[in-house]
Image (cartoon, rainbow, N blue to C red):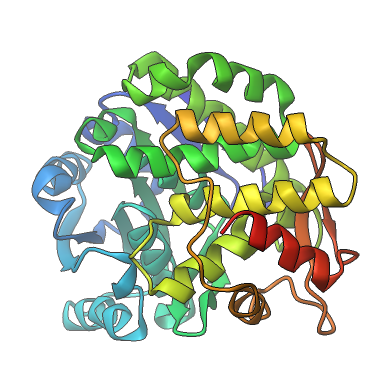
Length: 360
């Protein structure tokens, strides 16, 4: 069974297909190629598992494809690795109408999308996400970027794909730690805007951890539907879209402070979300029972609820590189209630430091 959502951005609208066996569906791929030539960007982990199947489908669709295989890991989300994609594109004499296909998780999707945005000032690209985190979050919405030593995703572009093809079957080979990390982004949607989904997650988290296909498909579908609504309302993150970053300002500080790749993105987001929940409690928006409810769900998902002891000053120093900083003030996504998030610059630094202390 296949579910299709449409991200409605006028002439830049595109389908999000979710289901099993989609890597073999040449009919879903064929309509999205302006030129029958493609570069598939993947990594050393994903390519041996799924590259041949994807290239076989592209061949059936009449598309000639070749591949560039990148090293695997957040620490490779850099200019140096990005240049390997440009080397492949230039070496194969790719034109502006050639399509770039990103086959992998969030790092591959982000780098592939950024390369597509830059090459000859913009070439079409397709997202084929193979991790839970990328299927529910990073493949949808057109955010592309690489990291800088001082901050995560600080260099990038908004650039929408032509198609998102989320094959649930690829989650069967995902390591347990990566699956748990993806659940952090799934839980996020319930906390920021979908209380009914939050309750469903509380009832079904064990089924998700057991990789029940129907439960995974529902989690991906509801997450993508929530994200699509937000992106359509605020594509360039001038307002509502920033709410998707619950826990991310704290979480990005964890990733940068420890060194990219030491903690997975979802692990850092989980601990960061608990810091945001503690701060929301200090501001009088959440009560201690609601903070405990968040903690229980993350713990059941096998995710950390405390960050590393970097020190409050170091956290805040790193958080000042966040993209939501405005006129020197930290703007944070906090919870006015479970299911309702807000972007605010009203939290005093002393309260932010206290929330960090409580959760690190």
